[in-house]
Length: 240
Image 1 (cartoon, rainbow, N blue to C red):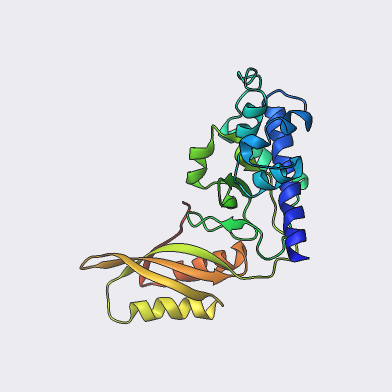
Image 2: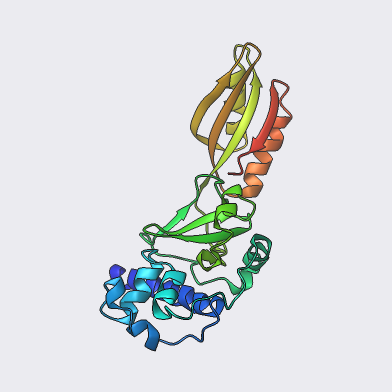
């Protein structure tokens, strides 16, 4: 039953990606051209092809170009990064990936550590499925010219799990200061999952901290508390 649900999720996601890729290539969506390229992608049925695209094993653009080998000269403009980001903000038209069952190929980017409350965008990655980034993640620049990989996504309203936020902190190099830092985070309800000293000088430590929080508001509260602590020189959220 679980596998059937997973296949349905991948199938719906793959179909949505292909419909979007058809539009961006100036083609009317139809399953007939997809049937002609099934062997190319080692698929037996169009549904299998949808699932493969949904899993990130093939991109929408690759499939469309295979289906229309003589016609994929740019008929549709490649959208700019700004336009893609504006599109990603329209959460009311998100591709249906809310409430995904366990095991769905959905990942949270380690570069920007998105949290509930952040505006987000999904990027389809070959072999990995969908990776969620914050809309201001610097990594998104590398996907600016592959708009068919962008998905409009939104946080599930019933998401009550903890997520990891990352902070870069500069703190005075004095005895007891690391203890003060962890105490402040603990008092604000944060749980440190990883702490790494990235640079150390006579006067300061530079530290990268991963903190389990409920959402972006929770992380913002922790940042404010840290900035109010005299021994801490600076606190910034990692943005990719």
